[in-house]
Amino acid sequence: MAAYHAKYDLLLTPTVGRKPFKIGSMNNSAFEDAALKTLNVLGLSSMVRYTGMIEKVANKTFAWMPYPALANITGQPSMSVPLHWSSDNLPIGVMFTAPMNDEATLFQVAAQLEKAQPWFDNVAVI
Image (cartoon, rainbow, N blue to C red; front, side, top):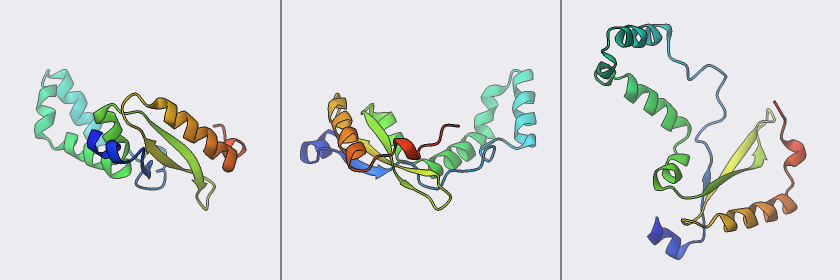
């Protein structure tokens, strides 16, 4: 990433790879919850790695949000800005990732974007 940022100021990606999912759709199934509880009660929680459940959860998670992981792994500062809205009025984020220790650039870009295309009044408080 340091080589990338030597050439480019920011990395621009979508924040998520899909539209927001319904509440609960990322939950484990009843069977998965029962299996986890059983393994924990028996003191065999380390066996979970052999069930394929970890890979299933990771695949489901990274399919929905593949881009933030890069900044999380490298420790780089990033921000998600709601620059677009879906047809059902959900915010769609645009993610900017800066070089290490360059949060100032992110704040400057956010201020410029908010001035050019205000989003404050569009973001619903839940």
